[in-house]
Image (cartoon, rainbow, N blue to C red):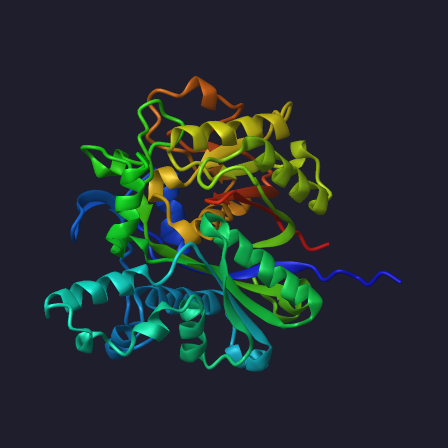
Length: 414
């Protein structure tokens, strides 16, 4: 006998983005196309455009605690607390042993290791000066663990390592754990502290994939002929996930129901994306959601501003959403840069308000559209109004050929 599948909803959003520290301000800036990308100066590397978050770092824990922990942990703790507050949730409503914490990460530990190597270089590389905090700071579960320490959560916590698809992957994990009955509530999201690691910038530079521009706010330009790479950003976003039954019982504001998802692998290349497999991923998510392509209102692209990446995704979208006259395509990285493990969830969060305000935020910085990125209904430079938005498909892809797509639907009671 087939059991009923629990319906899972998003009832709280907490975020720290390069241009805002709450969903309301974030949404307003996305609609205005307002980018706060700035030029930073990195040890050993030099200057580069980057997205840096500004948020009240001591709102939920003391400066001493932040110093003991990590930048990623600081972002994670802020986002988790903001999500709980946004959900109007008393944490004791759920048994803390039945709350799961799942954080998506592209990388973790490079910042702390680079800092310690630099520190001992000031002392003739004497490892006696290496901090005893290094190990707990660099384990992959650190940001999720810092959330549990801060909130006293005793349920499961762990990290989802899925390159730049990790934010979406964490949502999928949260949904599955709720549907399995392993937890009663989940905090699921993605975190990135990548702007503090010179190695990430140096690696993208070596690959010819690091963006440059006289005006850093114009450095991230997916789909544009003048694009020249990725703008690295830090950030975080955590969602409160609950069963629909529990959310209704609490009288929660429901942002969306997660109705479909998929992950697959290119099995092609360490770095170069493969549109055919991306298309298959989107199609599998649609099948799980029992939706036809034409029933999707917004596709938020992963596009990072690299030539092949943008082109392959546009091919995949053109294939999957052929003859879909009311499906609109946008991009968030053009405004906030690429927040790595946090990208998928930050970009989904930025589009959720479309269900209420009937607006679709634009992809900015496109002055000369690449003909190979010409897809129907690509929203460029200015937002558009579209009544009756009820579905969003969120793409998030990553290195070593990992793809993800998550579909959310507007919840309408009855």
